[in-house]
Amino acid sequence: MEHSALRAEFVAAIGADAVLDDPVSLRSYECDGLTGFRVVPEFVLLPTDTAQVAAAVAICARHTVPFVARGAGTCLSGGSLPVAEGVVISLQKLRSVLEIDVENRRAVVQPGVTNLDVSKAVAEYGLYFAPDPSSQQVCTIGGNVAENSGGAHCLKYGFTVHHIHEVQVVLPDGAVTTLGAPSPHQPGYDLLGAFVGSEGTLGIVTRITVKLLATPTAVRTLVADFPSVEQAGDTVTGMIASGIVPAAVEMMDALALEAVEASVQAGYSLDTAAALLVELDGPPAEVATQFAEIEQLCKDNGTTKLVIAPTPEARAAMWKGRKAAFAAVGRISPNYFVQDGVVPRTRLAEALVRISEMADEAGLRVANVFHAGDGNLHPLVLYSEQAGEHDRAEHLSTAIAELCVDLGGSLSGEHGIGTDKACSMPRQYSDVDLATMTLLRKAFDPDEICNPGKLLPTPRLCGDRPGPHRAHPLEAAGIIERI
Image (tube, rainbow, N blue to C red; front, side, top):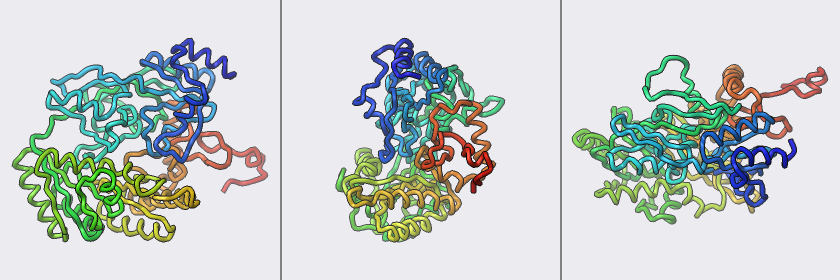
């Protein structure tokens, strides 16, 4: 459809101020947190409520124009990468906390509300929202729902899907529906479970009912240094094997510690191979008993230094260092790729050793900072664009993700597949698995206009349109074969 005619429809539906198509504004939306992939959209839309989102999507559906929902743009897998000649529907203006239900421990929020602001809004009632991605100060609840985000405390409290009661969704044809319900037990197919983590490929969420938890009565935190990543990994395995489930167990290697200390001076050691950040919360007596067991486990596995946070301020400083790790790495490398593959806890040490070997083979450095408790690795592959290391780094990053699958794990723990790892999905899933996922996706979006090219594999260099494989004309004519 001609640009001016499509623009006129969008303006009539949501207002001229909500339709951006000037080159400077469009460039601001050309990528998300995975900056290596960039695409300039044709329009960026800024709706202010569900009705405007639905109107915008209905126009896209009527003209088969691809669209991509976007929150804060912090996705690290290219999940909100625009589509050329497509539309970005930004949800940044839908950022209100609509309702707080203290008695039932839930809140209703719009998708543009940041993760941390949910907890701030309910703190006076002794409540909080448990999922806590490292980017929680800026990442939005809508994005958390799309990626099924977790964070440091997911070991004990689970992921976003475990803390969502209900979502209001604009489907790819512009219809508005509700998935889930205030009551946690509903008959029928779990469409809410299918939607959370679908990476924006099934529709756009415009209202979310989240579950709230009571603030723990006791919290204790320590940082333990180890002379090797293997010993740190063995300590994590020992904790879980003993029946203790900490609120969080984070690990950082020497390179990550160097970057963090240069950035925020969190008090981490610079003369250690690895450090564990461990936190327990719950009833005071239980926390005290389990904390003593964890201290002993650290000593049994050769800790060289153990620091216990004496005050809430000291604990906050420890966490500030961990949550600043990704940004801090920018101090020691001009560019890096971030992965988030998952391995079984018992294979943590093996995975880290193999990653180190792969990095040496590629002539690159890898900093490791990750959720050790559930085996969710976050290796950062450092490289210099000026030194021509981009392709090597991208190849290594992909190889690390696929290594996780080979070790019995997964391509992604919380960042999503997006554009970055879509072509690696056949490493984890069979053709039948992927075909079943495609059937679900097409049931919601038969025209394949809702965040196309993400999650499911699409050849990236052959010129195919986003979506499942389509036969090349020569293949259809029987002249060539697909292998």
